[in-house]
Image (cartoon, rainbow, N blue to C red):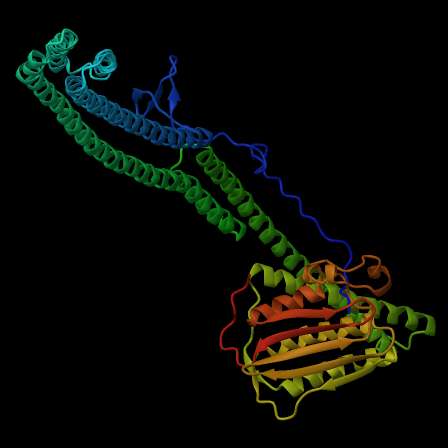
Length: 543
């Protein structure tokens, strides 16, 4: 089944020379005035105004994040350097302790060498003692190098060591001179006490070094703990600050986008009165201002279009009413002529009058359609709600179109369940809607059948009209319910019609609070169905 119609009618509305296209840009309301020196003036007070762009905000956010990462890295490097210094201090203290222990060991070896030389006085043992004296000098130099901070004790050690060397040298000379008793007496009287004193001094050095090493280890542990806490705290603070900053930046972007998206959805739904309020002073704020400017233009344009549509509907209603009066007179007089009131007309005249009457009725039907559509668009059509029988409504329509189907040799079938409860609505308008659907089906079906069906669904009725015509492509199914629209404009020349039938059906169904739809494929016919409430107590709002 297809809807007929000639060409779509266009109404040109002069919006005025001062109107601005909503696709263009419109100057935004000024929020500040720039002074000559570049300062912004707001609310009458001069001052500098910082308006970061979205790009600047993002760059600032990335800069802060990079600075946090650098801070964490710097703190980590400083902690590592301090730990390395502590480790070097511990190593130095270990070297000190090792040097002190070596000096103590060499002192004992000197005493042992002297005792051996006294027990076995020969040149070999004396040579060993002298070599040990030279080695002891090397150990003293090593201690002086690694323990530069122990100047006082090292000077005491050096003095006592000089005396120790002098005593050892004197004992060696006594042994070489054969005076072993004197050498033994000198060892006991001088060398032993010197060795004890050297040992006490070196023990002091060792004890100090060990205390320093323990203190260094404790300091290293404290430094490690402090560094760990510091790095962890800075990392957590950086993480929290990054989250806060990210949330602030994302909120400053996502929230305005959400507000603008919501506003655009309302504008798309036809709400041009609302305005988008975005606190941002960046590109998103400018975008919201542009959207508001466009919305204002759309609102003005929509008002003008509504006014033009009302004028158009009123003009069509008046014109249709004015055309019906002379047309009814023509039809009336032609009917009288055919009835022989003015005498029996000749055959040629009768044929012409019948043609006038047939085309006049067709024209009257088109005018009635235009008038009905104009009343609906102007909100002047009101439903007359009464109780009606579904079977009788279908039967009236069937009787009205039965001759049309017979002329085209089409099978016209109806399927109405028996015993349907009475419905409530505008019986005449529903019959008109069903008549339009059945009339279209018969008009565009050349062979086969047209079937009228009724189905009860809970508290609604579904009226369906199915035909075996050429069918309608899916891409054309949405627009055929619009005024003056059809699948193929060339059909108008062969089938006739103004393309208003389905538009009127859709409006009548919607006024009953129902809906209409189509199921069709090319070459497989079409099935039009509309659903209306079984009991309509109040007329639905017109859109």
